[in-house]
Image 1 (cartoon, rainbow, N blue to C red):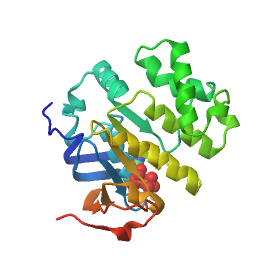
Image 2 (cartoon, rainbow, N blue to C red):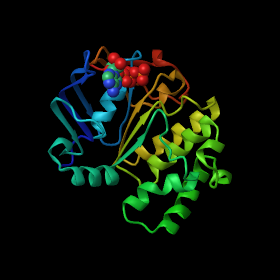
Image 3 (cartoon, rainbow, N blue to C red):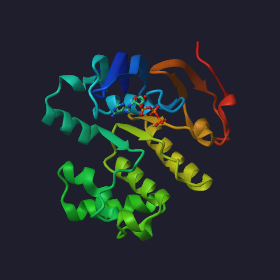
Image 4 (cartoon, helix red, strand yellow):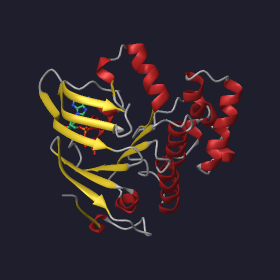
Length: 248
Ligand SMILES: Nc1ncnc2c1ncn2[C@@H]1O[C@H](COP(=O)(O)OP(=O)(O)OP(=O)(O)O)[C@@H](O)[C@H]1O
């Protein structure tokens, strides 16, 4: 990988879902580049393809055509076990529905990426408790997902995406269940990771309160990227999109 290899490179990415009765083209030729050290937000109306796009980027879904590379790696070209390994080492994903394992407690859920990457269970759970502390859940490490509120489950999911220090973190609506203060804290944590300069973040959001954390904002509509805006530096991350301006 050369120094200027982007964290994410999508070229003419197309994805169609076949439901049997109909075909839905969710991505209609996406071109997108996310730089290393960048926090890119993806915004757009419901159903425009945001979750589909980040699922392709994270190697959870295969595109039908077009190119998608993550840190120079074309995930479509990897065999299944290689792809799983690449994802486990390099990508953290925060799902919209959190996807926590119901029979594992918070610390055990957060420890999963470390265990997949070969760490001993006891050490992984100990590290997980420390990351839970960072997201304000130090006292809920033993709780099962069903014993946690939606916002607490969301923070467990965020801790799980961060724990193995992946180079790419992809989040689907990471603040949807969080109050203002907790949402800002979580974004500060995520942003601090991206500022590391060897990593990148892609965040799907409808939450105007967090637009100010973005370096750039990509606007999607009907399966396409229609605009990419540079976010202006601001000391007020709670500002809205009016503060962004077009990149030309
Ligand atoms: N598994 C699936 N099978 C069939 N169609 C799907 C599937 N997943 C998504 N779609 C369709 O693909 C299109 C894009 O969906 P997607 O979830 O990517 O949009 P989105 O922008 O993330 O929406 P939202 O903001 O509501 O989460 C929609 O028309 C949706 O109905």
